[in-house]
Length: 343
Ligand code: 5GP
Ligand code: MN
Image (cartoon, rainbow, N blue to C red; front, side, top):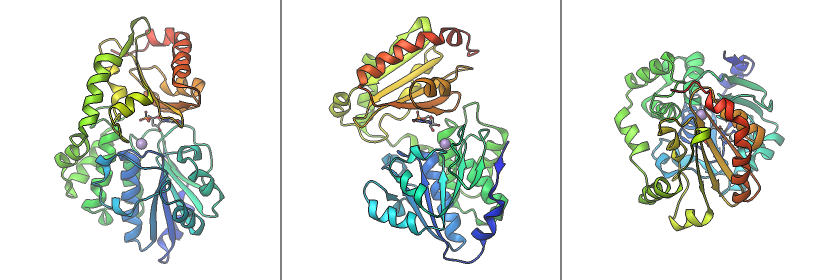
């Protein structure tokens, strides 16, 4: 069910020009986060608004092709400008996240800003910082929600090929190229509409998925050969990586994207975890097949959350201790792991 409380703010969005709007999204944005932000940027710019996009951090270079990439302000690299924009904003759109902790230090600035906060998101359990929301957990990507938001407000006329490309990229990413169970008939109808609007689907897939560094593939080989630990009695796969390993392979933002899925490709595996020492914190990604709830596992032990089959969390402990904790708590889920209805 879509929870849409944006009616009250729509007249303000449509009236007058020059309204100052900031769009932000979660740290280390993926294609859904960046694609939804840039699609909304193009739309609001067409409505005559003064729009900026602020990301809390950098993001992978295989997203730099997105139309509008040049205008994005990285908070970490340009704190003063980001703060100035957030303070002066009339509206701050918060896309693809629902808790201010997901935007790091920028969260404090957004919270203190007098701007109205509009959340457009598809994650469980919003923390409630927003003034208006366009929210559901039943849509596969925030990009799909942005399409619905624009269609509802202004129809299809305002959607051009640039906007369509940004939206399509996020849909491809969050549905695993339209294969995850979150892919609905509506998702495919939206994708078809975007094709009619002039996107080059094959090119977008190639820009996103055939556009990685050699370092990533070297690390991938190493991970598959040496670091993919299987715990067969719990149907679990685990990969963990140290700082030293990331440095040895000269790993950049985005290079480990998708590594958490390796484990799930193995017959009989129900739960897969990727634990990485990112120095500021230990970051974890979880994926599952069937009914095993990654989000519950993440929130119960690793200060995180997400969706049933894809979630994440973090720890301020050492990598060694975080991995030890993972192995210690995992057997508590034995029954759920063995009775997950995965094939
Ligand atoms: P990923 O593993 O791709 O980083 O994240 C998978 C899913 O889990 C995403 O939907 C993301 O929003 C969610 N997620 C990842 N890390 C965290 C976290 O630290 N806290 C929460 N609440 N959700 C997370
Ligand atoms: Mn998303």
